[in-house]
Length: 218
Length: 102
Image 1 (tube, chains in turn orange, purple):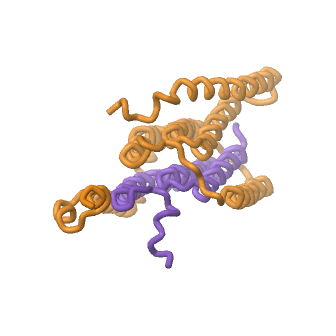
Image 2 (image 1 turned 60 degrees about the horizontal axis):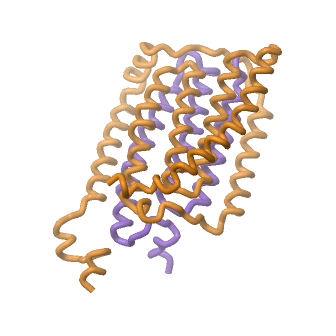
Image 3 (image 1 turned 90 degrees about the vertical axis):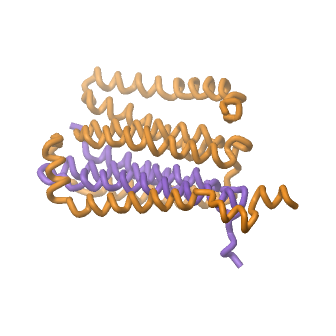
């Protein structure tokens, strides 16, 4: 199986180039942040925040712009782990743990499985559509709108409060009991539907030859 | 204390990047990855508001948990559909799956 993975031919080159790019971008950011920290312009949590935000945004840009499917999926991991760090900075350990468990452990593996089971092994490099400039314009307008709205708003008094495990669980299973049950039913239905959809039914193969079967027979 | 605007701006930029990916990518799985980015931005927003502006109730944190759960269900179901489309059509590019376009 492993010799069919699309990695080895580009592995070294991508790793070296990615390392050089990350170093070229990361070291100046780190130096500027440390200078600001020593100069008492920012506090230590802010330094951690900016480093984490750099990881999140670089990973997101990689997931969106990289041309190799597998590299895009791997860049997504950096973003999702970075988001777990953001949750930690927001004083919510439980969500950070859930984020790492569900995304780092489940969703990304599922996505890479999907890539491997479709066309990643034959054709890992994609060509995106011709709608790129249009998409960039729309996304820039949307992002600019959000940023302007956030900067313009007055957020009033802010207090940073730690969310304890015990209170979070009580809130979740006492006040939000019905939504929890509904989400459980939703998960059950969705995974059953995924199984039914992805299953190769035996009578379907016998009745309607599709795809490779049809090509092989014709 | 980190200003609340930092988190909100990060979430907004993350959402915009994911939105660009949804519009620009052709492969259905890469569109799913971009949707994950958008959901991560929304979750950061929820948790930020819960932590900074709702210190006793933190309903936003509970809602972010629901967002994560529904995202997991969505990825599972969507990948089942994508695998089915790939078996029928030998492609996962969304612009080639256009039987409904007459």
